[in-house]
Length: 165
Image (cartoon, rainbow, N blue to C red; front, side, top):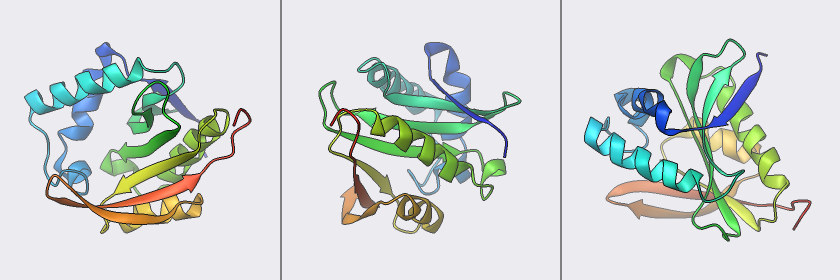
């Protein structure tokens, strides 16, 4: 399969981010709606601030070997000294069902294993069977169902045993 590259989003990458969050299909299982530009810009600014917390963690542009933008992968911390990270991914619809989500998760988990983390969590729409399968295939287990601003969510969790733990 084609090579996958992950590179942190920078301020110059808003158009790629907007392409994802402005797509109703992509956002159907996240916010249940595409984000208008002002919301996308506010969320992107938060993403950039989070990217500054740690040199290895953050939100990444996902590209294939030809440089095509596929989507976003994230391994984010709540604060610089967090002991848990959140794993997530969003792909443009034309890349769904082709194994990219699993490959993004594997690459992010490999990064997490190099750090002193206690665990990794992921939040999905309980109806998102494909994401649930990717996560359980990578050792995540159900932790709880929770309401997120009126939207249903399932939190899955995986303990990590990193080299520096």
